[in-house]
Length: 248
Image 1 (cartoon, helix red, strand yellow):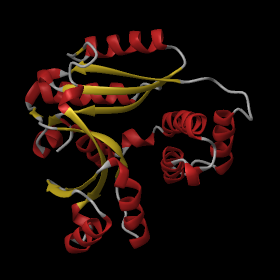
Image 2: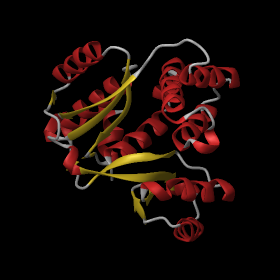
Image 3: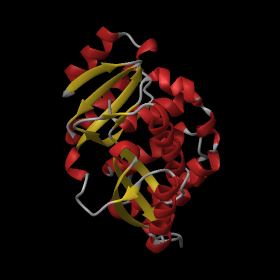
């Protein structure tokens, strides 16, 4: 299982991390602004903006906040100019990590990242050091306990999904990036509720962590997600559920 979807599941269970509504809003506003700047302010013709707006609505962001962020992106309102940048790193136990950022100050972001990794048993790497371990895919994740497997498989395959994987308490539906919107719409039309839906970087292999390194990795992920400049974190770790429960 990808560390990213594993982490999303952990957050979903713990709940407390998602209570940081202000930080969630800040990151979503950045994403909406950049998506509108790059692809225009009409979500019908801008898949990235459409996905960002859906994520904002899922977090109950007020409509006026969304509209203001779009107008800042298209230049109708003045706003901060954010730059997209990515970093590669190693975590505890040699875990490979990709980090996507939206920042108005790259020097600040790099300094913050170095501090986070120094504190939590990891280090930044050179460009290309871990990206080859990941492949870009559409990813839609469901809680297995609340899902009819046959219905899920039928909808996924009919809509053109590449694969459906069950691991632990989750179903992961994977698609080619070009098919992501079509597959996600099929689930939306069927009224099926997912916990994560995005274009993701899926690791081709995983590093199993237990004990101190598992605890370090979870604290590292928390610190990275808590940083306002970081929009996405992808990692190839796997931590057994019983170890997560013991740490929590």
